[in-house]
Amino acid sequence: MALGGGSFTTQNKTLPGAYINFVSAASASAMLSDRGVATMPLELDWGIEDEVFEVTNEDFQKNDLKIFGYASDSEKLKGLSDLFLGARTLYAYRLNSGGDKAANEFATALYGGTRGNDLKIVIQANTDDSAKFDVVTYLGTVKVDAQTVATAADLIANDYVTFKADATLAETASTPLSGGANGTVSGTAHQAYLDKVESYTYNTMGVVVTDEITKKLYVAFNKRLRDELGIKSQLVIYNYAADYMGVISVKNKVTDAAWSEASLVYWVTGVECSCPVNKSCQNKKYDGDFSVDTAYTQNQLITAIKAGELVLHKVNSDVRVLEDINSMVTTSDTQGDVFKDNQTIRVIDQLGNDDAVLFNTKYLGVVPNTASGRMSLWSDLVKIRQILQELGAIENFTDSDVSIAQGDTKKAVVVTGAVEVVNAMGKLYMTTTVK
Image 1 (tube, rainbow, N blue to C red):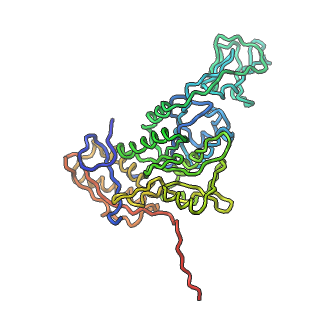
Image 2 (cartoon, one colour):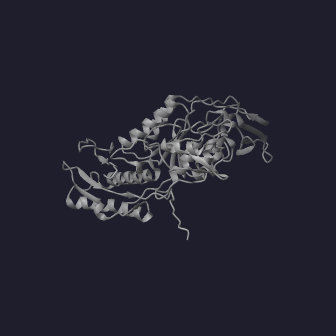
Image 3 (cartoon, rainbow, N blue to C red):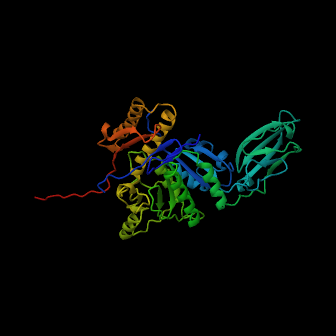
């Protein structure tokens, strides 16, 4: 079912759904959904192609070879290792799908990509039955499958290869697969990912790119989802002046050979998606594996903050987040400085998403738009805000801060209200009198 969503100026929407505005104050089942969900498009040597696939933190540790072709502590997966320092779930998409599958006379790699060239098939006569063979699949030096069969037709595909039923089995110490190649990454691949991931729910999207055209594509996607569809999430991107609360612009580059200078996006995506709604990433210590360039003067750090850049800086021997801010620079009467802080965005995104899910699943097309029906909705909305207050994400909230009424039509419900967002301590101004 198609649902409307996003912001509104007048009560003129056609699609049913939840239309929610967040504005600054003039002076300048109701439950909270879990955080920790990220999505990223990836360049991989192995793995599922042309589909968004889910990987949990546990999957990354236990099924790393099967999913990505390498151990989780491999240099090849350093970016994902950084991501999963924070993220609990990743919706991944392989950008370089469509490559050639490695093969030999006995088997073909399950996926295209260069990692398939590290697969080997070892065949030995079975010691208990001379009419059968032990067929073993290796990925590098790791045995990933073993079967005892009489003919190739008896072999069952495993997580790494499909076997050729018409092959003639014969003893071989090691027969490698070859010819595997990665597909190419293009704008079409990025757009295919965005088309597929639009139906998923996540807290933060990260993309490791350096070209301005691709950055612009992702920023436009994030703005459309937030402002037109009401899907609240943030985008983490490298060095892009988006001037938008939904986009986090990472300033620091990494200096590791063979890795994109934008690779700090992995870690920032992970910590931002998992940061609790009542917490901040300010002063968070970088605990990842990349070498991060932090060679900035005090004046450069000040300039970065004013430019809406999330920057890491050196504190003694540690590397830490200076300010947990997004790329928003331009303020207005309806959206003031408070919207520059990612803790604020986490709170309003939590409210926007949870209010919309509540309405769309419990009330839309079910509950009559009567005084009692509106009172039930009011009660659920108040409960969500009370939970946030108990967590310390908002403060000074009372029941009267939410009001509800029938809109201009029989089907419309109008909700107005206010929340006072709590931010973590960031500055200390102290005066000490010495006597």
